[in-house]
Length: 334
Image (cartoon, rainbow, N blue to C red):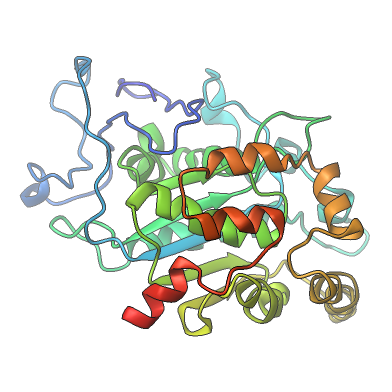
C-alpha cells in the first residue's frame, strides 16, 4: 500500500499476504476530540509527511468474534495503481467484467448487476462498523471472497477487484486515499480470500481464513449474497461442513427484478443451484467439480494455503467430513 500523499495518493493492493501491513491516515469527518486517538481517520497536519519504513507488528484481534463474508460474483477491472483510477467509477458498467446475464438490458430496463455487487460491498462495510467508535475498534472481520475465476479475460481475483471497487466508491464520494475501505484494509479488518470458485468455497474458505488470521474460529458468521441463495447456504453449505445452524445468518440483497424475472430466477436456483448442491454437498462431482475447473480451481493450491490447520479440516479438501470438526467443539464449549 502506498504512503499517504496529498490530494490524490492512491492505495495499492498487489500484495498476496493474508494480513496487510501498511499504514495510512484517512480524511473523514471526525470531531477534534478524536484527532489524537488510535482510531484516527484525520489528515496529517503535514500532508507531505511520509512515514519511515520500520517493522509493523501483525494485526491482533483479541475482541473479534464475528466473520462477515461478501461473496464475489464479478471483476471490477480498473487498476488501483493507475494514475487515472480516481476517475474510474464503479457505477460505470464497462468498468466491470460481467457475465451476459449480469449485464443491463435496455429493452426491459434491467440495470447491470454490478450495482447489486456494490450494495453487497457497502452492506459488508456497514456491518463491519457496527458498534465502533474512536475507542472501540471493530469486533468483526470482513472477508471479500472470490478467486480469479475468469483467467482467460483477467488474472485479477474477484476479491481484490471488489476491494478496488470499494476504494473507487470512496473516492467518488470525496473520501481521499480510499476512505474507510482503505483504513479498514490497512488495519487488517478487511481480508481478501482469493481461492474460492463457488458459494460453498466462499463459506468454507472464509471461515478458514478467519482462523488463519485470528488463531480461532468465528462464533458467528454473516454471509452477504443474493437473497435467492439464502436456502443454499443455510440448508446445504453450512450443514455440509457441520457448521452449527444457530451460528450462521444470511443477509440477502437481490438485483432489481420484475415479477417474471424473479420467478425465473427463483426457479433456476431451485433447479440448477439448490438441487445440484443437494445432490453433491461438497461440490466434488462431475457437474459442480467441472464448474470449479472451468473457473481455474486448483485443489492443491488451496490445500497448501490452509496446510497449517487441523487434520480434520485438511480432510475437507478430499471431500471427507469428519465427525469432529474444530468449530463443532467451539459450539459445545460456548
